[in-house]
Image (cartoon, rainbow, N blue to C red; front, side, top):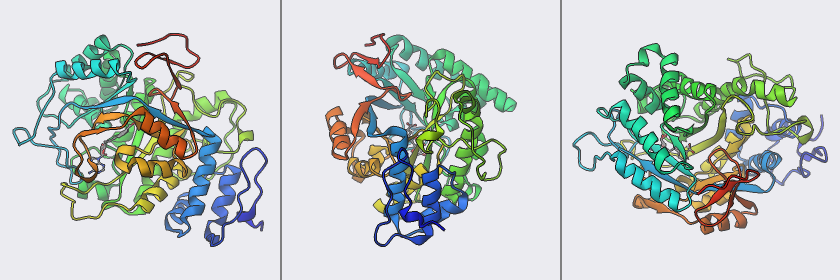
Length: 450
Ligand code: V47
């Protein structure tokens, strides 16, 4: 057998991958597969989670990240708006929710949200990320009015809004939940008509029934979360996916979460890949799907066309990015648990990069990872650190206030220091060119927006 840790990959795919002193021999078959662009199995994932050799794992994640993005690392100029913290659910990990009339409960008026949107656009933001709790009394019109009013006041601001959990809530309160998938489609169509541009990745937590029943009972389960995103993709809306880890779940359950996302993305990307001339190799499947594996992270010679799905180039939407979110215990019902450590965060992100070979992007959300850790993550699989954010209410590092802002300069510096070239992107990962502070355009698109 080839001494795989010393394997010489083809000239185009990567720099040589010499074994480091202390490399774990159990990783050798995984290294071989990654170099050849062969999909990793669930068992490979377990090896990645259990190996003491985190650095080989991180170097592998960096290799596939560079195949996809070279020396580019993305950031954006965005604002988060949490329109209400009132929630019918009581998830044990969540310190954000309040019950109606409880101290600190709030809901924003549409006018206040529009004022935020207007300020964001004037400051040059390209994206508004809007999520809230499952408010028991706000009517469906509140959500469509909100989108329409933002669209009117700030037509160029991309609205990324509402987790899958909120979409199911909206289907319920607009009387369309009994139609299940058709009801979800109908809600998403209404929201899209009103101005929705994409779905954020929140609310996924960990796709496992045991963890669900123990920590967020009452929330939608994985099949419904995945259905909402499938429906969004069917309507041409892109979306993201999160994974909230480091609480009561096991590492094997994190892997299960990644496998379900990967299987769904295979089904979604199939037509795009065929049009690209990407011939799916005979790959081991993870079970549960007949769709051929679409491995975007393989070596260059496997890509006759574009390596990544370009927004608008395919009639279907897809998952753009996986965002591993480390658990923040403070003030939650699970606050006796320790938060995951820095090394666990790094490993989980690297494993996500390696297992989710059909996800174009991996985001190290700096608000939750810290900007310092996000720099390490850029070197170990991530290609995106999210944006300027400004107000963030859901988690707070070390008791920070909701004002959690960083400047473009800080983001760019963090990226450069990590050895990458900062590229501002829009929500759909198209590079942005600034005409001046608040005026911008999508590169290769002559229409200037402000
Ligand atoms: O849905 C809640 C999680 C999510 C805690 O799509 C917690 O681009 C850790 O989804 N500890 C919201 N996590 C954040 C989110 C997100 C963030 C950035 C970018 C994108 C995107 C999406 O935060 C929630 C929940 O899964 N969360 N409480 C906690 N204590």
